[in-house]
Image (cartoon, rainbow, N blue to C red; front, side):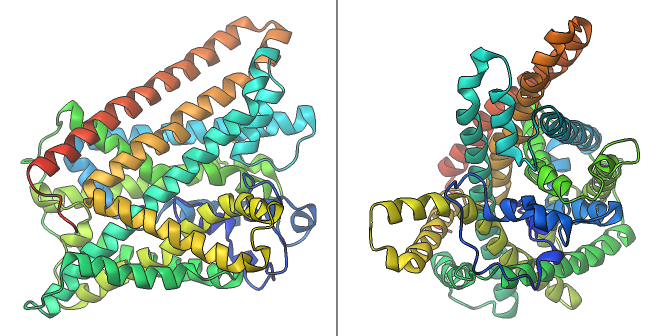
Length: 480
């Protein structure tokens, strides 16, 4: 399946917004706490909120949509194939609603904590920590571990996204090279070596301004490619009656992981809310959340449904692989490669931005060649590249790595953690007001989401592992 594309799951289009272009962040030093990223802190700056950080309703809505809709949408037809046509349609619609529901829980928790305890501009990890700190006494000791758990999930998710990007670039680049030069003797291993070199050059970029322009370029690339592919899907011959309506439970679980992977956006909601002139416009029937997630769900359902009824049983892990290689489509595929290549920088930047301040502090405290900080940062980025490529080599199929990432870290961030935070945040209020009926209703809903989330995590992990082991036994997993 196609990695969740440009400026999407990594929070980048929102957090590295067009408003940041031309702003010189280069001289700002990182704070010591690595769990709260530099970008988050800049968004939280009162000066930024008072001036260029404020965005209105329409700007927020556009930012949310473009943050969630990326090249990853092209993997959704394969999710329909895994689940079955109408089960895929149902799952896509259901998870669209669940995503809205959990986004809403995150925003409600942040607003309540800000109002009751005068906290300002919380991100996902800090919101969870403060929720536990201000909850019932027995729960307070879990405050810091909860923040670490969320940041670990985000870290793991981003690393998985980077690995899926590596696989995507290699597969599509190989297809294009084979088309232009059928007799080439480039080995799969050499593709990875060449790609590692190009990706390493990309991630050594340190300027926020350059990264912002790369993000904008990714938006242009993915929008152009998506428009071209969508019109092709609409005009193609469709096969509805011959496609299965429902597949087995294993396929449904895999599809759920891929769908959650596409809908991931929990970490961007609070930074985006913090930048709004009127944060209350995030909520409500016609709020940014309801309209934005509704539009994204419509796009996802449309592309997934059209892609599957167009290519049927031949639907590939990315419908980019279903497109012909001749004519204009060669350049559309090349554009997709550029989309994912530029997005890799943004996705890894999220990891670096979270982890590097902590590493930097250790280097300075231990006086371990602190004058070579730039070199250590480059080595850290290269190390992350190495881990991403290693994971891509170990799990070199897009239809294995995408559901694996989505059904583990993605499911925890989307279902399990929001339900925990919601109960922990409001439980003292419900008990104080003796509103036991309301407490039971909400706790029942949160418990249902918690159990469902863990079911998908456990069953999805086992199913993915079985598929990976089956591919190994069948000899499908080679170096590249």
